Every structure is written in C-alpha cells, then in structure tokens.
Image (cartoon, rainbow, N blue to C red; front, side):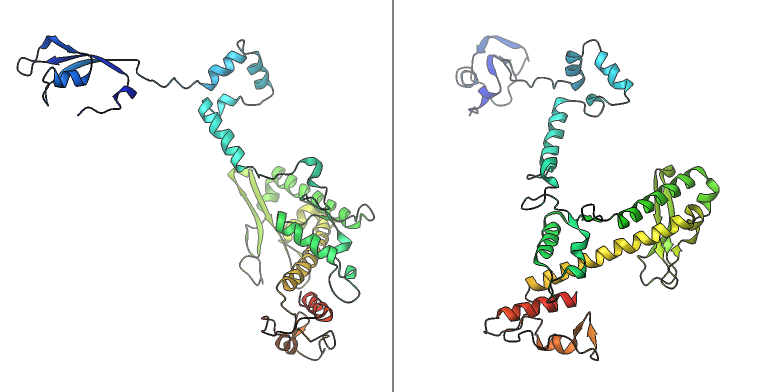
Length: 351
C-alpha cells in the first residue's frame, strides 16, 4: 500500500522504474503516481526507481540578528556610538531572532504577574506596595495598655512578611528624629573606609584574619574575619561583638576604621538587632493569635500575670502553659471577649 500523506512531502511525479537485472532505466515506464507504478508498471518490492519531487516545503533560514541590525543601521553609525559609550549591542549576546524571542519569553515568564509600579510600590495603605513601618510603632511602648499588640502594627508587619518577606522600617519616624539614621549612616561610612583602605593598603589587608568561627561562639555559624575572592572582585567582612566586653571582632578592623568607626559599627548593630527583636515579638504574637495557641474558653483575664517566683519561658509560666492548654484543647465552650484578650496578652508575653 502507498501512504496517504505523501502529498505533505511534496508533489511527486516522473516515477521511472529501473530494470532489476540490467540496472538500466526503463524509458517507456514513467508514471505520475506511486499507485500507477505499482499497479500499471508491476513494480515489485526491491526494484529500484527514480522519481521527481516538486514544491518541497522548506524552512527559511533563520534571520541573523546582526543582519537585522545592519538593515536598521546600514552605515554602522549607531553601532559606533554605542561602542563609544562602552555598551554592548544586542547581537553580541543573542545571535538570532529565535534566541531573542526565547529570551523575551523567559523574561516575561520570570517577571511577577502582579508587579507594582514605582507610583504604588511605596504607597502602603490598602495597596500591595511596601508599606513603610515607623520605628516607634514597633516598640513595646506602642502596645495597647492591656498588654496586647496594637492591631494596626500587627497587621502591618504580617502583611509585609506574607506579601514581601521583609519589613521596611523608617528609623526617622517620618522625619521626627534622625538619631538612629545618623548612626547607620556613620556605619556605612566606616564600611566604606574599611574597603577603601584594604584595597589601597596591602599591609592592612594582610593583617586581617581569614573568616572562621568566632572564639567563644555558641554556634559554628558565628563567623568573623575577612575573605577576598576572584582577584578582589568579591570581598566579605564578617564581624561580631564580644559577649564579655562588647568589643568589635575581629579586633584588627578597629585598627583600620578607627575608634569612631568601631563605635558606629557597634551602635548600628544594637539598633538593627533591637528592630529585629521587636519585629520578632510582633510576628510571634501574630502567629500565636492566629493559631489560638493560648485561647482558654472560660479562663478570662484574671490571674494571667505570671508569678515572679515561678520558673517561666519568655514570661509564660509552666503552670500557665499547662492550664491554658497551648495545644488547643477540646472544650466546647465558646471563648468570650475576655478570653480572646487574655490569649492575646499571653501571645505577646511569650514573644
């Protein structure tokens, strides 16, 4: 049988059978289709034949990106202008339109589907932008008088964590105070001085110890020291504070940035760590509230303050942990507003 899809290959004609014995073309046996060659020409399997195929579908040569750019810039004037600015042409990284299309598709697929523009990314409020948190709002002093977290602060912080994985904090409280911001600015100045010095003074760079575990550290992840890779293109400085005297480690860093620089580094660490502690307090309280971890129906708010003489973990006594049933419990009693308030207080105290 003859396949029915041969027409997709092209227009076949001039099928000429070849004599099986002599190997010569049979002049008077030329057919327009394979069917005619089989049925009328008595073609048999294994018998050679010649044929002609016309209008064969072919793929056009993929246009080179350089050819396209030559059409747009026949004199090469634009290319020369780009080179003078130290920039690269598209065809230096992508060699064909197909590759360009693949790159555009990759970029489109990698981009967030609901990305925000510059006009709304810092808008905050009900938008999905980065709503900036004022530093004072994170302080324990800004909690509610009853000991629960401010609802606005709690929702603000958790919305930022869920949507963006980070929380942007304004150290100036909207321009009200610049004390902490100035400290961080001095810290960055000290860092700039450090890297400028070691890149211009080989002796200073060689005086620094390589990155290793800090002496007396409670974890192998606590590293201190300096490392440089790829001919100085990648440089890392790991610092820590001595737990006993608060000195900056490694001590050689202070020799490079001076006493004022070392003080700025230590002060900045205190500011950043305090922010981290406050953000963690809010996040833990929110997680506890969301899980009803300390909700005890019928418990009310009486007696929730821990006995100062009783062993506790982060302000929560062992007795409370047992009686409040932190695993949820099976009580059918509906919690009252006082129960919810008590759970929120315990959630904040635990944090």
